[in-house]
Length: 156
Image 1 (tube, helix red, strand yellow):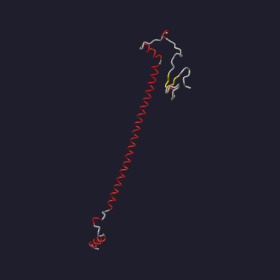
Image 2 (cartoon, rainbow, N blue to C red):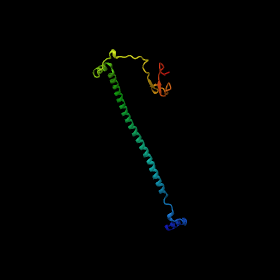
Image 3 (cartoon, rainbow, N blue to C red):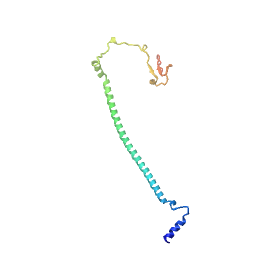
Image 4 (tube, one colour):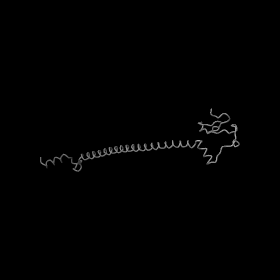
């Protein structure tokens, strides 16, 4: 078969209305581009997942360090609180308060003529807020207040 004859056969197989420029150009190139784009998308997904994994591990590690710091600070504050409570108990002791009251504040014991005794019946009864008494409504018609009268303190 000679080349001229082969070309003629090729042209004869094409319909008259189809020219050489209208023949599809290499469909394999389109398939190759689709494969490359697919590979790039898959690579981006894998890299993104890896970055999320690394970031989450980094965050867990930082939170662990923060937790250790806060725990150490809590222990320090608890120890400081314990020391302050001991110091407060020492400062409140009577054998310590009495010399300070006499020396620094000029206080003395009351003389018998300076002491007054008041009978309990004369004293006004205290008014306690209902929230402090653990009640939601008042007693005796007063909303939000607990009013005690006589021997009955309204705590039935």
